[in-house]
Length: 615
Image (cartoon, rainbow, N blue to C red; front, side, top):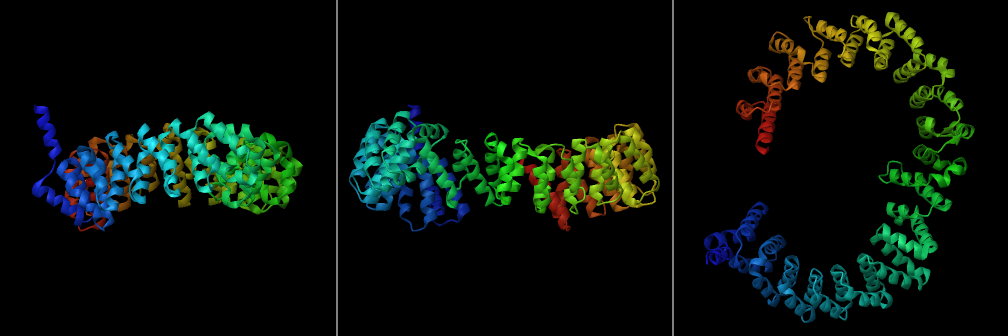
């Protein structure tokens, strides 16, 4: 008895003034108020709710009607008779909406009523009923949809699509009949549905019909099958009409409007030279920045075993394909004879030259020396830089003197690459040049060395680093400090960092290294720097930033005290540092700054408080 009483209460839902209020919001409220009304009505469903909101479907305001539909789809099952009753409403639109809601609810009790509408009502309602019946796995729905195939063409179209959703075997013969005998629109819909059945026997019957048609008629249906089918269906179709399928795909890819990635992917199942040529033709017309270019290139590269032997010939055939071919050779591991590649390099535009030099270790059949030697003389810094790197990766010691000349004089970035290559080819000669740079070289010489320290052992670097920390050029000194972070596992370098912290003027680069490497051993020293208000603002800020990176709970009071600093930048830094500690007390300390007159401080505080509230 108690269970029945509880059920009755639930069925009642909202009522009275409260229901009036939410219905008014649903009809006249703004988007926020409509959302609140929908939420309330869904949370308290009942018969009266359903009955009271149905008339709102006659409103001219579209958002109101959409809101009512949302509610009915959520709660219509509590008063299914009320929703079914909408099918008899004198308003045609409401009868159409009823079909939509009942399709969403999928309650089999509604099937007889929807079936009736599919046979006897205005054409819009019959169509909506046919669309709704596709949501039911029920013989009654299937039989009604089969009857609807005799209706007007556009309603028969909906019935075919709905039969496809039911996947009923009983429907297959009639759908096949429409496929064979109907006009293009209904026949196309039937073809689409039969493909989506995915049944081998159905597919074979479909393909057998296709084979009996002329090629021009087949083309449109092949496109439907390829767009709707999967890999298995494609393979089955290939077995049935292989040559013609290839011709269809080839024809589609030559038409610019049909050059989809999926069409080309299916074309690659036919691993023959004509496929390679077709894809190259597509690539020739594509911008390398096109979002599909890389995928097209990968598809061409996947046919490497087909075009590898003729890669050189393909390069000779069309200069416009040279860039794509070089990239594809790298991807597929295909090599091109060195003399041929040299000819192309000498005549190629800059972007192709760059691509050849980036790829040369992977694509040249030979040492690559002749091409690289030409590239080392090029005026383009990128080409020369790639060539320098290739010398190192290929171990071309016979080009060592060319590399030494570049180390001495060239663009800064190219000199750095050249020094790194020299370290690989001849470490002793590289150290000789570094010694000369450090002892008497220009500021750029020293920066070139500093950029290559990662390839040299820490102890070998140590005397050079120690000397450059006292260089007369401030930029060199700061660059040297930045390098110290790469060797902090060596106590000698930690001592150098310690020395840099002892002076009155502390380079900010030292504080950045400590932050990046989270060198907690310097915590006390950083606290002292931060607390010393006599130091410059940026020095204190970088010390604070490093302390914040430690995320050390013991620093809570330090950061909290810093909130009251006279400088807004320090206050903001302390707000962020406190937030990173994940300490519950932090929000209470930060909250007063929500009303700060400083926009930046207030914004930082708001971000922290909002983030905490959302967690």
